[in-house]
Image (cartoon, rainbow, N blue to C red; front, side, top):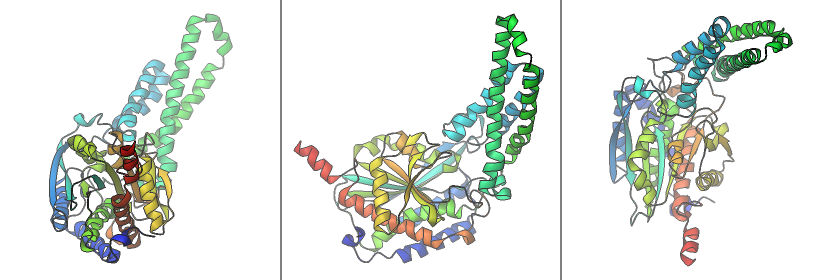
Length: 435
């Protein structure tokens, strides 16, 4: 049974869904694509803030610096190093070939897979923003629920649009990375053979087949070059996408939740609900990271749970996220279970999934020890609309947005009533006091 029904029978999810679809349509048609740290991103957040002033006691827009091209700007450098390593290894030096391979991997690992601000300083700086709206409880704030979705939209992933997300991954992206791995292994093998030959002159007779072996390696490396070269066209550096589902749908799920609570007359006694429409998520979770950095002490003063809502389109693959940030962080068990149980109460049997390439805003909170999880309804393949011009209003699925709003209203009511395991749980707190 829905916990939300214990609070009010007047929750009109259909009305909030209509509000979300109309709002998304307005933003896409009137503002358009919203590059990280752009005036369009800010303008959308200002519209969001205007709406939230009707349902929240406090709203604000916080600014922070961002280098929007830092997150993917390493691609030409990585491609150049990878391709150069093939020829350096064959014509010049295996040691320098290995150096080039390592240099190619470093920004790929730290920027794209781990979302570190590794090479940001090399790129122009912009100002991005977070819109924060707070619905306060009737009494003292004893716990807090944060629902965060991102306002910006990504630069178009050209290969996804031309080939489809899964096809681009299978036939370009994975082979390109495999090629770089192979080049690295070949360089290491070459160094080992060279060292063995130098240290043990007699070993040369035992490796008479080495020239043929290295010729075969060289040919294999050549085969991978077209895949690596294609990475130069992975992403446009000028054209951003509409971002209707990713992630205006998440922003409106968050705002529709607060609006739904307010219009149903639901006022929590001691639970604060915060909506964040973050900026520059597509530039490496920069908005969420900036918010956590600015508010870390406040976030840890009282029990806080965070749910990142990101893309409500593919209802069939709706999931609660267990691991995040390319599998490097594990989200809070109690918050994951809270959202999972809310899904069940609303009639949805969802799985726990992991983000093994990429990340969502929840990761920025989890990294700082703030209980969080991610929640989305997006095909992980990914679908062809993902980060392309096809992520438009015509491609919206109102039923997925409706499910997101309904589940997050239930999540908020469940959290207010019982907290989450390890986060503001009334039974656990009572046991601790008794002990």
